[in-house]
Every structure is written in structure tokens, then in C-alpha cells.
Length: 216
Image (cartoon, rainbow, N blue to C red):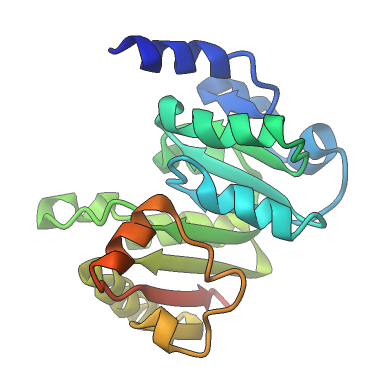
């Protein structure tokens, strides 16, 4: 492991806005009251990478709490560092395997989920790793409030089409859906937030897919 990665791993150990692995378990059901110290809705960004979406959403919606979830601490470091430097108090990060998400949040504790440019896991043998695989969707159903929504934003047509198929098979409720986000009527202030990689995709004229759905 390079020195820069080691430095970042060491530094996030000191960040008050980062919870790592087993340390997150004590927050289950207590995120709003004990970390954010309010009763505001909680929004998750799964596979958040550097947390660009979480950071920008937290700035746009100070009346909500945002938690970026990823396993790679050297990536989380960037978003958490920005949160500290800019005094963004409605922002936190959790370093865990997303497969274990139910260990860290109570049923109904989450109001919304974002999945932004996640690894599409294109190999059929890795279907269960896709963040919209039915096994993951059942976890999200448990975590979300009754009216809670899931948002998928991706450049990967395969993951988008797969998600649409599963949403239809499970008879979930679709609120918004487009395979050309920036040519649609949905490209508002929130959906126009662009990550580093999204800017690269757009420079190459790649279409951006988006679907928002709920379980009831």
C-alpha cells in the first residue's frame, strides 16, 4: 500500500464524521439522535466513492442528514475531509461492506437511497454483487420508511436495464425513469450534480441513465 493511502487511512481514524466497520454498529437506530443530534430525515449514498454526491446533497439540503457508504477508506477520506474543512455538519461517512448494511441501520431509519455510478458487476457470476440485485433490494425495503425511494444514476446501460427488469419483476413503483437524463425533463439541480467520472463520460457523449423507484 502506498504512503498516501496509508496516510489517508490513518487520518480518517481521527475524523469525527467517519465511522468504520464495527464502530458503526453502535449507531444502529441512533444516527439522527446521537451523531447528527436532530430528528431530520437520513439519506444514504451507497458505494459513494469520494462522496461527491453526498457532499453536494448535504449542501443543498441542510434540513436533511446524509451518510456516504463505501468500503474504500482512501476514497471516503476526500468527502469526509471536505465535510470537515467546510463545516458541513449534516454529513457523515460509514466504511463497511454494503452487504452488511442491515447491521448498521434500523428498519425504517432511512428516508432515501442513492446509488451513483456504482460498479456494474457485468459478469453473470457476479450478479449478486450488483447493488440492485433482488437481495440488496430487500435490504433497502427494510431500511427505508414506507414512502422511501431508491435512486439509481449510472452510465452503464447494462446495470440500468437490469435494474429496470428487476423493478418490473418485483412490481415496484417507478416514479422517474429515463435512459438519457440530460435530454429529459428530470435534470434538476439534484440530478445535475456531476461526479468526476460522470464529467468524463459526458465528454465522450455517453448517455446517463436514471431511475427512481419505491416499494409501495
